[in-house]
Length: 402
Image 1 (cartoon, helix red, strand yellow):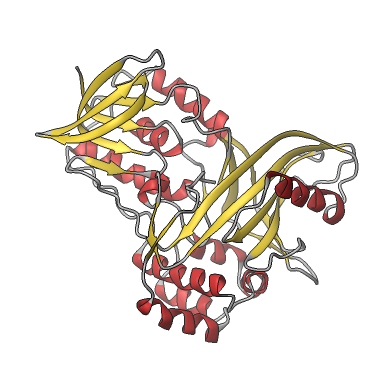
Image 2 (tube, helix red, strand yellow):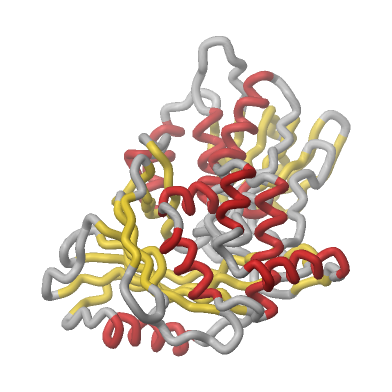
């Protein structure tokens, strides 16, 4: 049986981030032994994907940043677009392959982190820790005993919730014949897309050059589209809305992110904790996950280096989660016009303040000020309705974090 102080399960954004924060020695801190358990190639490994976030200054993983933008644009269904300089913030994009390569190089030099390729069949509490039953790619069973387990694998089912919507998207990495993109400006939300009957949709454009960009179609709605439905939606956006002309699709990405007010359990055993999307790092109102899981893994790594119990903190404050619950209810009930709500916020308020609000970085007075720029009646009605709503189980798909 192999033994370690810390077992990190899953080598996605959360697992790799935590392992990276625990690698190597820091003056005045403990250096725990770590085993990072990564699923063998196959269906348990997620496909390549893109993560986005905003911050001021440099990221811990700046070397993996594909591109960043200081200017964002939001387009309402009709009328003039809203363009804003978000300084000192920058909106950043990381491709998962680049992130994994960067972290893998760092971990290969770490004396205290070992990687183990195996699927995890069971995790159970034992005296003084937890035992993991693993299955290697060649079918052999292995045991791993750890004092602490940090599990970042996607949930098998969603928690009971009062409201659950899906953020589902399909994107093309395109190369155009003409220089049609402005590399200095990202299209954060373009509501000129056809709107679904129950929810909202928007386009999303992240240019990496004059000829290259990630172009996505996104919906917040209760139901997924068919594969043909996503292809048609992106094609319409590229050809009829953006009018890109001759272009080549280099790669694609597809994802589903639950937007739910269901509570995500962060502790599932005496020594077993969840991190990342499974541990509540996703912001329910936006679907963004990368910034939340960085806050979470930073705190967990600090606790482990102190020798403390590594209980992951909530990635988002109670006030933020309460406001998200109201917004989700207002959108799901159809009481608010989603494109008008989001377009109006960005039009009437400084764009960097809206981003800080969406990342939970604003104070109470700023939150109240932002709330006054939303449809007060429908939002208040949704807030008053929430306490009486039951939490019901949900069978919707689980997350592929963005």
